[in-house]
Structure formats: C-alpha cells, structure tokens
Image (tube, rainbow, N blue to C red; front, side):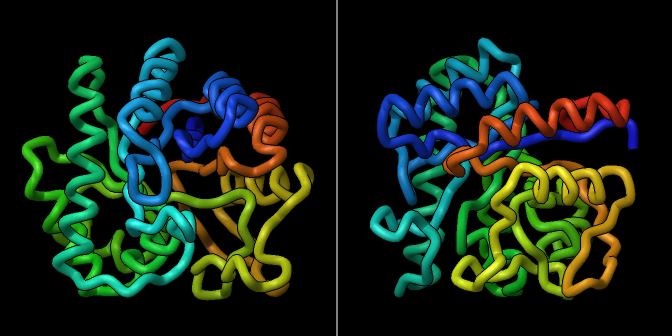
Length: 250
C-alpha cells in the first residue's frame, strides 16, 4: 500500500472547544463525513465544516444517522422502514443543499453510529440504503465496513464501495465491531490505536481474541468526538510518514 485515505466524522461539536478540535483535525485528514441533522447538526454547522474543508482541501460527504439526537444515533429506535428512508433522504438533501450553496463537490456518503452497523449486515436495510443512494442524480461512493454484506451488495450492483477500518475500535472474529457497551470495545490510548493502524495499513490485518485476521481497507476513521482525537490524528500522520504511505482520498 502506497497511500490511504484518512477520514474523520465531524460537524458533531456542541461548543467552541469541540469545534476548534474538529477544525484542527482537518490539518491531518484527507476526507470527512459531516453530521447532517439525524444525530446532531443543522444547516449552519454543516456550512461551517464545509467551508473549513474547502480551506484545507479536504473531501466531504454526508453522515446521516437514525433520527435520534437524544441517543446520538448510537441506539436502536422504533422506526418503520418508510420513515427511516424519509429521514435519511432529508438528511442527505440538507447536506447537498449546503454543499451546492458553497459550490463544493461531494465525494462520498457514510452512515453514522448504529445505522452504520445495522445497514452493513442487514440485507433489507442494505437494499433500502442502496436504492436510496441510487435514486440521487449524483452517484456517491459509499464508505462502509470492510468485508461487510453492504460492501458485497454494492459491488454486485457495480456501485463504488470504499471499505473502512477503525483504529480506535476492537473487532470481533467476524470482523464486526465489538459493541460499545462491552469492556475493551474502545482502544483508548494513542499507542494502541497506532499499533492497530500500522497493522491494518502495513500488514492488512487486525488482531481479535489473539487471532490474526485479514482486513483490507481503503480508508481509516478517526472519531472527531474522542477526547484524544487530535493527538491521534497527529500521531497517525507521523506513523504513515515513517512508513512512506501518503494520505490522500481514493
């Protein structure tokens, strides 16, 4: 591997300190996915982050979620498929409206939180999401979990899939993410995250329950809302520089 995309989930700030952290992260990533009203975010927050991305040359995409601000899109909610589809469409439409107002091209789409996990493994939800994305005039590549059902279905339809890996999350042996509620699900130290990132990028592997598993990814995610996200972004940039791997979009 000679290059890899580094993405971050942004537009999730609640105060000036968190906003400044997100803006600083843009110095170290090549793309970002911006919250667009499902779990957090509105027209103004989307505009703020897109404008900053334009200054830094960072590619952008919408980051829709279950419509659940209270649970930050990280829990299951009672919602029918029709209402879910309507919400995702409204979130994407809002994002596209802002991007168009700033004449900024849109690079990809990536789901957030539990919706990201559920769509990646549920055939009915995958079909709903794929058909929804296909209905837009602009055909957006989809970022999703490496080695997932969603990825298989997208490739079967000839749509562009960008397989993603997380440097701050523990993996199960089936390459799904360990549930956030379980102990050890989050790799909290910078050292742990750099070890996993190096393994993914250099060896195309991760370790789960002391087993080495093959994992091929084209983009790595930094969660912008983590306390040490900026420190991680800097360390990741240095590590990739040492390994002579460029940071760039796919």
